[in-house]
Image 1 (cartoon, rainbow, N blue to C red):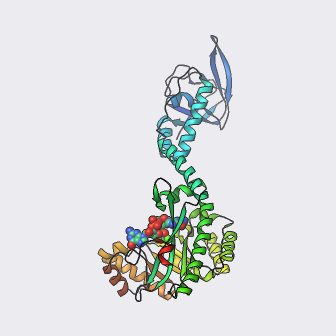
Image 2: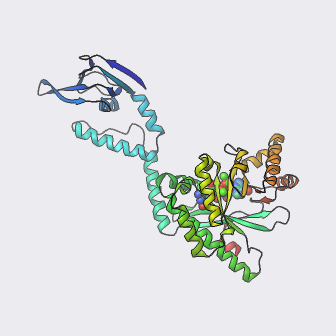
Image 3: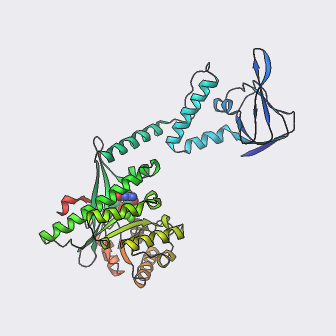
Length: 380
Ligand code: C2E
Ligand code: CA
Ligand code: CA
Ligand code: CA
């Protein structure tokens, strides 16, 4: 953003000038004069922190008033292009809201002007709001479901635990994958209630699995349940209250519950340490998810009291063709062993990957080659 300085009495713009920018007053005062029934009169005064000239800028039309420095002034210039490009990259919902408000303001100030099209199309904003509403309704209507994907011992193929992966059974769209709605839930404030439901439901299912397998004699007893915790859930001050409630209501042994966080949660080291400490106090375990996609700092591994490391599937894939990546995975596994961390390799689809990981002595694998995520019924 550029600045502009005017001395007292200088003209900033005149009625009828072409407009391609607005101004924010940093220092001083600007008087606004407009033609009222043929006479130029002062209609207002703009002070520090206030904006002027925005309407003509948005319309890219002529100025409808004159602005003169009442004192020495300094202004920040906002070019139309700067605003349009910001609007284009803004959250579509904010964008839609801003467009509606600007049009409403324009109608109040200039009822004679026809309503204008949005500066940038806001279809995306509408679609998003619609989807958000559907998600909110869907959560209330029981359209969410937890799928389970097994995590198996690489040597025995025995199931050690399951990852809980949420699905949305949309009445018209069918099964919606989480990458399409988790971010939406994060942005719209729905992730906290959704996350609470997920935690509770995952514990409930894991407990069912435990009791059922006891009867059937299948070897799922003692299997852990790994639950993804998003950024908003991580920041939720009531997270642990709800977690303890879920633990006590379902009766699950907390030792069987694992929470998956990503490296982004560790950037505020002190907050992360407190969070992990609270997990330990409740007896639940912590896994670091998607390792190899973020900063992947090896220092995380000893700095934080983590129990499990999940190596991301992109890293595993790269390892299959790239010798250097393989060395890195080897080093990570060796270090994790020294730190008594459990290692899970994610996204295993081929026997070749299993062979490589076995050679590297990675103990646990998760991936389509073992099983795809499936509803609880697949395991009862
Ligand atoms: P993630 O936590 O990394 O979960 C693993 C994803 O990889 C899952 O996708 C799983 O279905 C997929 N996957 C597993 N094995 C294979 C494989 O062999 N090949 C391939 N190509 N993919 C495999 P999904 O279920 O679609 O979830 C995507 C992401 O959405 C998750 O990534 C996680 O970040 C988020 N997510 C899913 N469920 C939840 C949830 O309950 N809560 C939160 N906060 N996030 C969730
Ligand atoms: Ca995960
Ligand atoms: Ca992952
Ligand atoms: Ca992932």
